[in-house]
Length: 204
Image 1 (cartoon, helix red, strand yellow):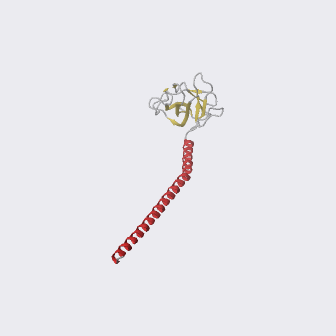
Image 2 (image 1 turned 180 degrees about the vertical axis):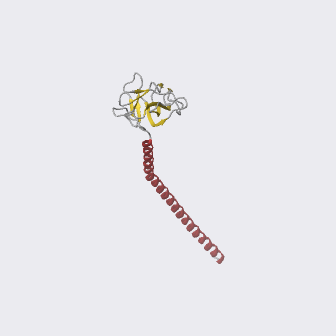
Image 3 (image 1 turned 90 degrees about the vertical axis):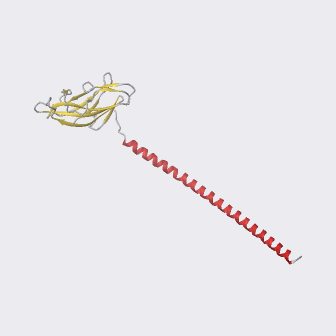
């Protein structure tokens, strides 16, 4: 065998060894890369599974907090409600929000020793039938002596509390009453004809 052939065979053999080495390194690299990717995906999936219950818990807490912020209307009882409380009377959510005093307008002034008590009231129909709200017929004001008061006519109100309420509708307005400045034990009563019971608030 000539020297030239020996050199050629030697170069060819070295090339085969180099190729095999590169192939092994490439396969090892590919295997290592694949293993690393699978491990990372598994870790991310595990982290996501671990964090999901926590997220759901946070959402539940937030929902609970939102629910606690909603106005809760209790059923009428023997104990009158206070200003700011809402009562659920046969599907009508009624609340007395505030009471202010007024000296009337240019056409109506309270008699000497009297004052106008203006009640801010809202009524929401959560039932399934239309109902009529009347400031004169649905509401009545009385004192500790049993005297009854009727609403008076004055322009010193933001909006009257009269109208029809379809299911889901809400109405808010004011009702003015003329009472003595020395009156005590004022109570507002709301009732619907042919319905049992009544809703009562103390007016201080």
